[in-house]
Length: 198
Image 1 (spheres, rainbow, N blue to C red):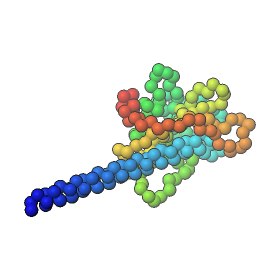
Image 2 (image 1 turned 45 degrees about the vertical axis):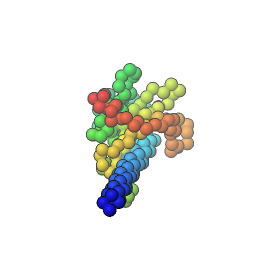
Image 3 (image 1 turned 90 degrees about the vertical axis):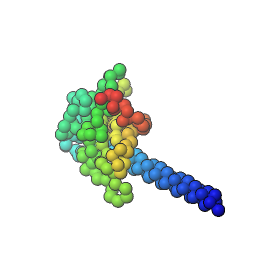
Image 4 (image 1 turned 90 degrees about the horizontal axis):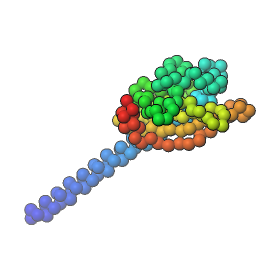
């Protein structure tokens, strides 16, 4: 009589553990998806920034319209209209996106220059997503930018870092024409890279 009760108890406890593990895994995956979506939103916001999202006639828009390389500072040290603009570090140096503390105060909060706001409702992130923009040498003329964005989940421990290469619309393009994404990747080990660079 005791054996069947113990067997039933063991099966019940195993089932409960499996259900709790599945719920925890699903919650972590949902949090990662929130962080990924917000990092992607920050990339789009940075692209708008480069394309003049700050508004015609603003100092920020003029930086990108004129290709002012002097506005991109070492270690992303700019403020005001130069906030989040980074001078590219030539190889074999450590890239600015690895050195900058995106989980701290480095970079630009979503909507800072574009005026966009995140939609409300659903799971809310622990923090606004952020981005950095590096000016890279472009062999074929025109400006080439590397954008690195971080999104946070509902807890600050969940982060997703995405990166794109972006070329602003070339001179002669239709007014208001968007630029072009030339590449995209997720940097899954950014926290480790940042710690090693720091």
